[in-house]
Image: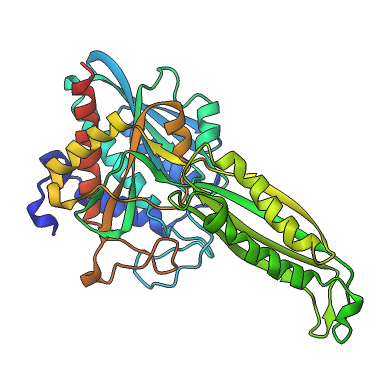
Length: 396
């Protein structure tokens, strides 16, 4: 599919380097805030290119700066570096060599792409009207590296005017790009519930206030969140992913715990969700004579793309891959801490197709067999390069 898509000569000659870099990073994955080897590779590469870089931002983050020959705005590009606590099952030659850790979301590709972009931009800086910041971020998967990077000045000195980023996307075939203004990814929240009640013998439930039954009713009640308490045109997902209670088959326990996640797009709705959840659980639990405690944690806010900045990306995508290969309806209830950067400065985050079923590269993100078509690497680099150039041209 990519044969009909032309990338610049500067990018094409770096294809092999991108593949080698990505495979090296894939073979040596590192968890959140432990990306020391990865950050070292990034810093060394930037230094070899003559690009000034600040290291140790939010522990392991790296921020590079390319100053154009002419004055102008500052545009930032962001790539995340961390891996996941997953045992890789695939037996490819560059599989993870770190036990229990795997690049299962494409972040190794993001780093390889941005390093290639850095090299090309440094080569072209005589024609750059403005500056480009290169943000290599730790801990996207959890607990989040974007917010601490912002607090430590990643968007300052010089102040960033716009920011862009991409994410490998195995829902799309390689050669396709997902672009959407407004909410692209959801806010990701977590709730943890502990139900307590009088336990007892399984043969005499009338002598107890069964917390397992209360948990079942509470979890069922939570399904009313999206079906009855929120506008049905407003996407909200409530999923319980963990439940624990009891030790014996014939004993009703005193305590049951469960936890889950709630995803939403609307920043105005989100602050109301904790009370809704609490009320639903309370109604179900108290009616059965049990009590409960709940902890509700708000993690990443929704990733909301600026309309004007997304027009820049959209135009670049259409020019590179063609109108029929740009998906403008893409949206997911997954979360991303790129959201913090987009809350600070206008920008746009887009999806880069990387699926190839003929090559067997179709496992979903966060799967223990995840991999992607490396033909996406030069396309991603070209997308970011043209986006920078288009934005700076508009900003003259």
